[in-house]
Length: 302
Image (tube, rainbow, N blue to C red; front, top):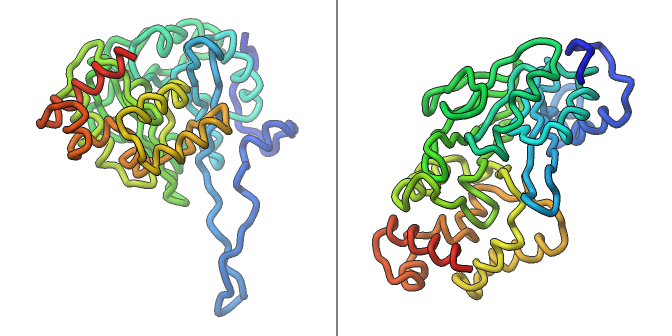
């Protein structure tokens, strides 16, 4: 149970939290200036803590995103309260939790909302698709809002896995660092099953909406599925150097969230290459939506 009120102290006494809040905030110098002598690289304000859940089974991620300057924060897809509330309780000493955010309504993403809310000292909004548990706000497609002073959020509606799927694109105003939280729409090297949609919808979600983001946008998916996705990619994209690079990284690292970008997904993710001759040949289809549907059938078959 979180009992202390979420506040914004001047200085944290937690060394562990200090390492979380400033992983990249050691001053870096880029060159010699004309006056005082040195230009300092802007310090990032957006910080992301991954919270693995159900490791070894569904391998979900919740994400705690905070603005270093204001200490405002949101928690994304906190589906398993026993694994999430202890972290929120510790961070409440230094962060001001302002919202729960969901990528879609499935229980392993939104099913912890009520229990998380009940553990907090005061009520906060639940931002997500219309079918998410305890939802209070569903931002329209392409609408924006802010976390604290420095993080701009854009809601990207990506119906297919579920009809209420929303990907959350975030930008750090100080450094222009960009990230996207994709839930079960886009995985590293893969995509979600079409539970409530079809190939045309997933094609639009991946290859119009998400592919339209800047190539340097880092991808934070809802699950750690990269190793199993690579096995499929090796079948349909043999000899692809980008897939080989992805395979090596997945073999060497247990977690891959935030390590690959939209630009890299376009190179190694078969579901973001449905327009290519190689994918048309593999599937025997010509229209991108049909290629998408066939690829998902092939992936489902194992």
